[in-house]
Length: 133
Image 1 (cartoon, rainbow, N blue to C red):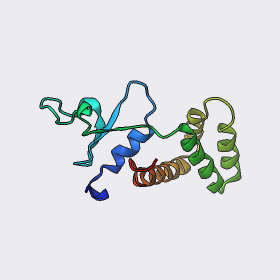
Image 2 (cartoon, rainbow, N blue to C red):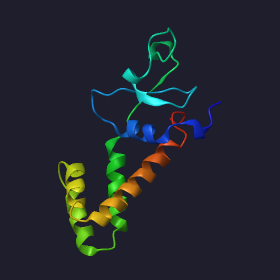
Image 3 (cartoon, rainbow, N blue to C red):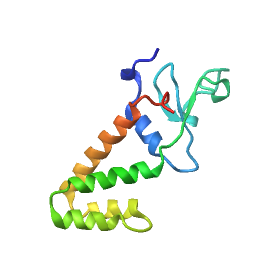
């Protein structure tokens, strides 16, 4: 059985967040490697081949979970002006881009957001994926 320490959690976190239609991410349960399909060698039958069932497709987590993370982060912001600007950025269409653009106005908060976001996605990646259902 693969130990969680062998799983590339950073790559898994990226894969879980990648909603682009061009990307297909795969997890190799024998090595812990997570990569786009093209990164796996398909030279030998059964070696990195999703068709053999050895690789597990990584389905992205719904964007609503990423939105929830942004909402939770905003609740932690102590500066009323920054909290208000970030809260307004989450309203309406395109909240992800507006949120990131608003963070550019607050460099300290931007760094704090990336730390918060990384911890949240790493926790999600290590929470029993892909066995949860």
